[in-house]
Image (cartoon, rainbow, N blue to C red):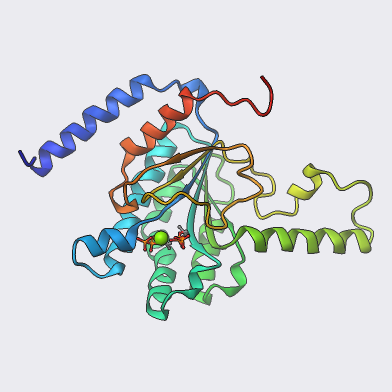
Length: 256
Ligand code: IPE
Ligand code: IPE
Ligand code: MG
């Protein structure tokens, strides 16, 4: 039998309670990274324009940010726009570029109040000026917050990040700002994610099993969790399920 909306919300709440009771709050993944995928297919299945999928995807972002923060996740990284996504039709790129502003305009007061710190990884220089402005306002307004870091990957690509890191490091060596050996720790400081821990858990939605140029260096030892659910249908129970599954895994880091 098809359930009414009220009943669905009810069962979502029950499921949330069950999952929360099973999750060990002492062993949460400190950093969760998400490849939010499947907006276009979600819309297509409903006979809607792809933009409708992106719009619904923003609603999922709201829910997942709030759930992560309440759960006690320290860093949440969301892949919002890749360096490869510029290859999409101009109208879709423009639509995707309007979302950070839209999201921040509505959510920033709440993020400030909830002590969430907004952060950006990626190259901001190619973002349209209004997007740069909105993001900078977000960074500025939450600069002194000490709670969850909400890290948006915008115009982010891992290979671009690594090449830029090499260029930055070389320049510092040539100009005498860096002396001594180049270790993994030193190299990490030149990445966009400098100062952030590596993700413990990577989630990708929509049934794709690839990294799509996301955090190639940082995901070296992350636990990977995939779901066929499209991002607009992803909800807090999926996140809690991923966290629970993560806690069932044994992370060996090469040891026995
Ligand atoms: C994710 O959904 C949003 C971005 C990549 C920006 P898609 O737009 O990739 O949706 P699909 O994969 O085409 O269904
Ligand atoms: C990855 O999704 C990028 C983001 C989620 C922002 P894509 O939909 O662009 O990835 P591919 O093209 O299917 O690998
Ligand atoms: Mg996709």
